[in-house]
Length: 473
Image (cartoon, rainbow, N blue to C red; front, side, top):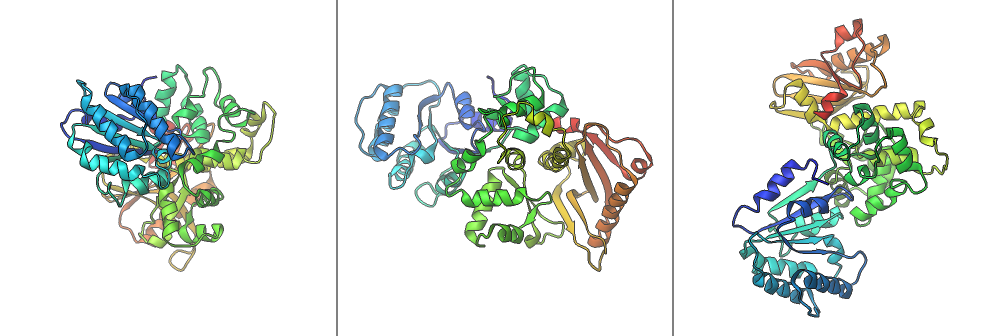
């Protein structure tokens, strides 16, 4: 299958092929996001050596694995007893290799190779500093264990300190890339169906690759998430432990954030998880954000203590709400559940997250792609300044003296602004002006599935009425 999306990553990786410099870069991303596929496809004609680490293997077994890969790539047949000797053998082999293309050396699942006290990272640093950095060569390292990669490679304190040319954080597909991926597989789905699918599994290529043509989103979700051998039925149990060392704290935070639709402040997460505040807690939050599981939203007043954290990983949200603890063998389980009021309410929250992650599309639709903006949340608790409490889930604060209050609704039909909801919208507009004393123009922007019904409330209040089509552009 051809590469879908990843245009900026491909451009960057290919640029390293056209210069005469050595490059050492890391590709970091969550499990199943397509890191290995991207590297192999872009560097297919340049890759002269590749080794994939063996999970839970000891030093001796990893060295045997290295020897086998050396034999495969260079027809060598030597016993290797340490990583220093291994890298020396690799240098000798590369010097003897004649290739018209810039050579690429690729170490996949690096955290599995570099076990504790194995000496691998020290040997890799020595090899890069003493030999590889002086060659016209590209060295790529990759791993799903995000916390390990960030600590031991990207932010290394030892011999690899400041040696990384670039870190590529490979993120899930956007909605547009998801649509393109399905089209490459000759699968036709409406935007509404793709969004339903995305809300359950996100833009993870491996998950999307399980989809077969001619089926509805509900059928696909039933097969992958609820059937006995469904790919995503037990994926949550493997996801975080594969990414993070001591993943229990990461999972505790994910569970806490999944319990609320409005996000949590740092103090609220600490109270609900009973974790200790400090650097370790901050590191876990940073790792979850860097891996794309959570998003942070600074309040308009920029009070750090009020920063909101939201769980924005689609699969985790869906799993904790609908899959975990559900043992059903009914073939129509999801067909019935997807018609329930519980699912419709949940979709509203999940769709808000989806819009937040695609805010660049919304900015494009507003015609403000080139305008400097900050994306905020706004939570006001009733006080003397403004007696009524209100919350704005996404606020686009623009340098051109405008604020967009974004309202996001996922319905199977056009959405109607009734009298009570209109009163709520007026509270948000008036309250925002009163609490912030802003002199900026405040406008209401709607993103809905099929648009808004025309009525007096819409005419009075709504400035921008977009459908989900804009999220695919």
